[in-house]
Length: 458
Image (cartoon, rainbow, N blue to C red; front, side):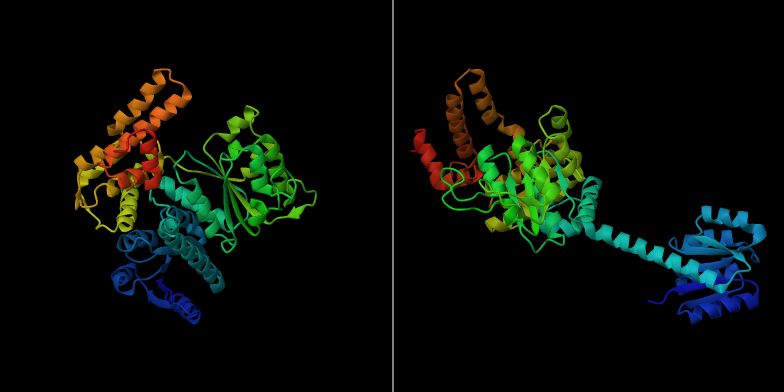
């Protein structure tokens, strides 16, 4: 699209010279000898830039700029001024002019300023477009939120995606650390490579070492064949190390070697294997504090903390709750093949007043339960939402706490707590075993087996 420029100069020869020069450079030019005519034509011509003399009949270039910006706030001004008026031109810049040029000047000098302005306008336009698209960009990774806290997260994800730097994601349980790791990988140059996930807290030290680095045949009892570890499987892709704070000290040394030398050795092997892997780690604790306590290697901490993304807890971005609730409501309505219900404005009130200690995961589980147990409901009101809120489940949690207070043995507590949980699920599921099993994220057959174990099967 051809850029439109207004030229305002009361001296005819100078005005026509500038006009002809800029037209030769491909700009659409409209020239005037006074500010009044300029203002009256802004609406019709819709210029992008005004090149105006400072001294004009009727009123000066600064006044023209102020009046013109009232018509079109985004309009950019370049002020032409004689040497004696430089101070005034500087004042014009303080009041919104892009730049000034001293008379007499070479036309190429003016062109340089215009081209610089065009570049800046293009960057501003691109940035605005990126900000508008940034929030939607990560919807494909199920990251939902338009709060300023989440926009900051999106910007960080965007800035690290196209590099191979190590990233540390810090956030409470349920804030979406794995989703962020997904977004980093699938928006990076490694997106066509593997994305390998491993939780460092669910394996014992020996098994974790084998999972991460693989093992050779005969490396230990049960190693009947060689096995590639997660780092080998993640070659030319990304590995996500969740709960890295639970990684044993000796394995931290091996991870440090991967970061420094980009190679691993399998358990029971002595042959270095090169790996091209981007590491994204996550933690829900303060790693720096663990370093100070001697519970985490300081050198490894600085290696993985190249770029840090802090995920806010849900209570710190409550303006996103309605978006998240609607997102999960749609998700589970589609899964259960039920119509999307109407939601009263008051229905959201309890959601905003609760602190969500389990963060987004807790809100998702709450919404799933709401949909699962209300498939025939056409509208969701405040009363219904309140009946499902966590504070109304105190009977179940009270049962568990009372077991602990009675000084029962650990096995007795687990046994009685499981029974209380089964009772709670049956109550919430209105006696429907399938619904109750879904609430507990287990198969119906497993649920029935547990009922039988506790003598609760009719």
